[in-house]
Image (tube, rainbow, N blue to C red; front, top):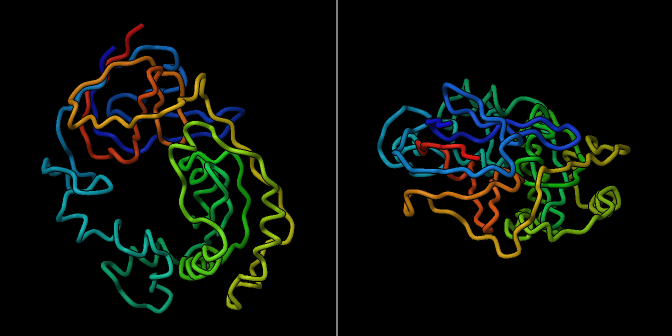
Length: 265
């Protein structure tokens, strides 16, 4: 069967194994059902996720003008400590910024390629951890706004990583650790402003991904440059499709690309 649509990050459900769904406009592809099937991908063009422009995607699914103008990709998204809505100060769109920033946020530890600290809206737990390919995660603090989460992350990343090594994550080159142990070790470094929000007792969340075979030497597919690719899907982890020949395709980093997808036997 053939499908055409514009890539957006896959929707997920955290069941016994994560369930993945790819929105292709007229159809939702349940990616778990496509494992062990041959899939053909071909590049069609671009469509900005914000304005619908067919100009080349600049970053994060947005054309260049939208990337520098839309509040959906402002600096405070990647750097929460730059949030200013709690001060009633506008960056690009104060109403949007209040909606996004002035809600409960979680600072967490996740183990994907290594133990890392991160920030997400409470409503995005455990989606954020799934998207990062973490097999275990735990909340450290729950704060009422994004700024407080940001300054906590800045303080803690002096003592623990804040990035995921995508190759190690995809190779499943990981080890189980006691994240609550890590949490207790990091507690003294939490800023004074957020110490009262420390979560004393909670359990790790464990996540299992639908992967039949992990790549030994994952190689990333550039579908724009290559234009077309065909391979047998053997797993999905994070936002990556994993193929039998060790090619991997990051749906998230290719948002805004229009593709044809053909599912074969």
